[in-house]
Length: 237
Image 1 (cartoon, one colour):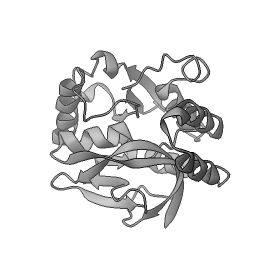
Image 2 (spheres, helix red, strand yellow; image 1 turned 180 degrees about the vertical axis):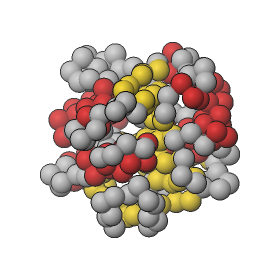
Image 3 (cartoon, helix red, strand yellow; image 1 turned 135 degrees about the horizontal axis):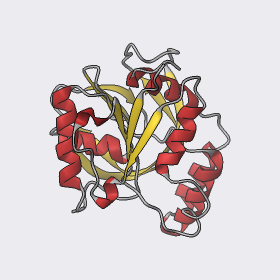
Image 4 (cartoon, one colour; image 1 turned 45 degrees about the horizontal axis):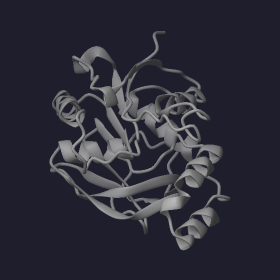
């Protein structure tokens, strides 16, 4: 049986010694997450941070937009082409998942709004307020890694919030059966989370650092989200 073809649009390229040289990049972290499922995908990585997007939405069966330390609030050269691609996926009802930066980019491309907010770092308890067919196993909450300073403040027309938390009002949304987003980082591991936190400590205050570190011993549900995502893309977890 042919593997489902998943295109990963990478919007980050970390060149830092502390992080970039010590861990796989965003696309590989997602590959590691999904490869832990029973069915693996056939992957194609698009270096969207360098301007690369699929020429046709039908090149792959489904797509994922990664996270990034960059902000959709900035004038980034690759954003217009990415927004056009997102709108093309929406028009074609091609399965598209956005995580963190990807979640925010999908919101903006489809007519929503993003704004700077308080930092949300660490493991956050996310309440699942709306179930979709691919959300198996069913869960009322998920503990998920977060690392963001921007947030979606207004949904695009036709989109529905399915996840919220005390720190993030729009923690995930859907549109039909073809758009699925999360503000979280299900692909993070404990070692990577702690490394990125250490790298970021100089711009955080002691209270933020202490509050974040207090969350990191909790269990996290990235693998559960991976099962949801696999079903959403059309695979079988």
